[in-house]
Image (tube, rainbow over all chains, first blue to last red; front, side, top):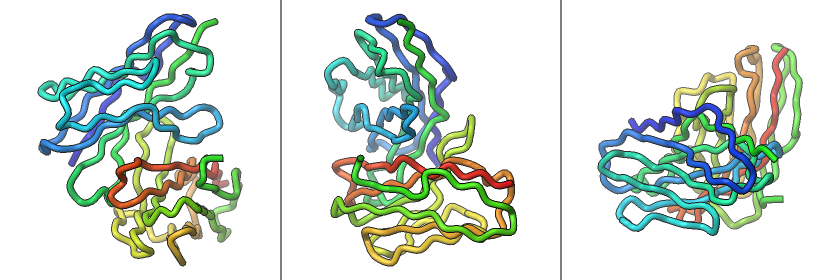
Length: 117
Length: 113
């Protein structure tokens, strides 16, 4: 079974600065997807960024980018120019490519990101 | 509004009550999911419905009973719950395969007293 570990229960960053959230995972599969989701106080899970394991290039979405190290099974999220609206819980998640996706996502415990004005 | 609507937003129930959570999506997705989110624990996948058929049941206690009458609606029927069942219950939907990812609702915050 796959596991996802987020070792930082809470992180704090000054507004406009850069912060990196860590995620490691364990799997015996070679092809899979990795995700970062954001959960603000509204409770809705919002997709921030996704990475396909067979792609070597790191995914980027505006101020959000990942550092995907497949051999190390590491998938960190970098948020540049942090904004107050980035304050939320961030979850790292894994999905197997096999099974057609019907087995859903495996999540980490989350990192609470605080933005200091 | 994300396209996945969950009701009620909050629910308080006694251990002997029977209640139901509702999830609705009109995104044309053919798979729907129930997740349980407890404090300081990873989200746990409870049930998956693919074209109205249940395809995953991760050893969830029988006091939780899912129902999927069509591909747009998903229910979670609750009866004789325990205080440790208090959590945020999230519904999600997707195409299969989920090439566009998953869309989540805002959850039902359940408190069992």
